[in-house]
Image (cartoon, rainbow, N blue to C red; front, side, top):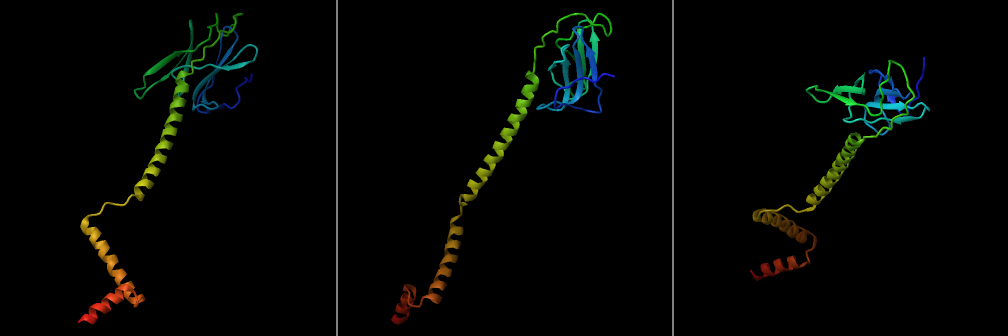
Length: 195
C-alpha cells in the first residue's frame, strides 16, 4: 500500500471514489470529490510531481458532482452531468501525458499546467458579490423603513379638526381645573359678569 501526499486542508467525501492516474512524465494525478480550502464542495484534481511537489490542476467548467475518468491516446478526460437534463460533459485535463503502456513511465519532463481557474474564481466572486449586495439591500431597507417611520402620515382636513378639537377640550378642562386664576377662567368670569 502507498499513501499519497495531499495538499493541506482538503477533505475527501466518503461517498465518492478517489481516482489516481499516473502520467507518462511520472506525475500522479489525484481526482477526488470533497472540499478544498476557500473553494466550494466539488471535484478537484491535484498532481504530485516526481519530486513530490504538489500542485492543483484546475479545469472548466467546474463541477460539484462526482466524475468518471478515462485515459485516452491524447490524454486524460473527466466526464460528468452538467445540467438538469443530465447531459454529459467531457473535459480534457491539462498536462496529462498518456503512458505508452498501462502503468508505464517514460522520461518526459512534467508538462506545465496552465491554470484556468476563471470559472471557479468567477463563481466564487459572484457568490461573494451576491452576499455583499444582499447585505447592502437589507441595510438599505432597514434605513428606509426608519426614515419612513419618522415621516408624519398625511391626514385629511376632518381628521386634523377632530384631533385639534380633542386636544382643545382637554386643554380647556385642564386649564379650568388647575388654574382658576388663569386667563381662561378670567374670560369666563368676565362673560358671566356681563349677564
